[in-house]
Length: 199
Image 1 (cartoon, rainbow, N blue to C red):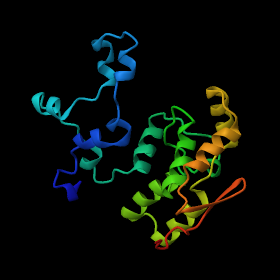
Image 2: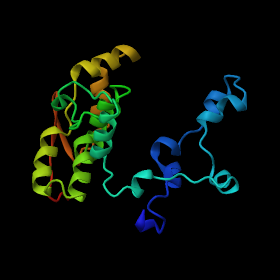
Image 3: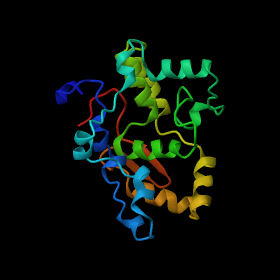
């Protein structure tokens, strides 16, 4: 945020995230919904933000010790139930992210194959910045756990959308970043080692 000359607590740029950036509702309007029915699914425009003086604030900015891990610890003390699965099967080191559903774990897998980093790296980047772990130690953990996934979760997802796991993997491989990964039969192998500069 500092590089954009905005206040670090300013969350109004969320509209530029990929998940919101292409939230076109024209496809659903054809289903005869009334405009007011779609309000919860439409992100306000920049004009609407200014006109209505909307300000999204990252509360974490105001807490000196805020981090994903500290937020999770605080939530656990208030009764949050974390994942009971072994994190080695899905790369969520703290077992505290996206607890409302399992499929985000293979979303992280796909992100890893597209960009070369997943959930473990996200956690570890923050832990490095706040001084909880050395970069060299974090790189070893990320190398070990990014790209991990549960075959059961993928199978459940494939069953839900009625495709075969082989079709799922063919689509993943088609979209894998070939600059970062080699595809050898059923295996997708990184060409890089975490923590070492890659050209």
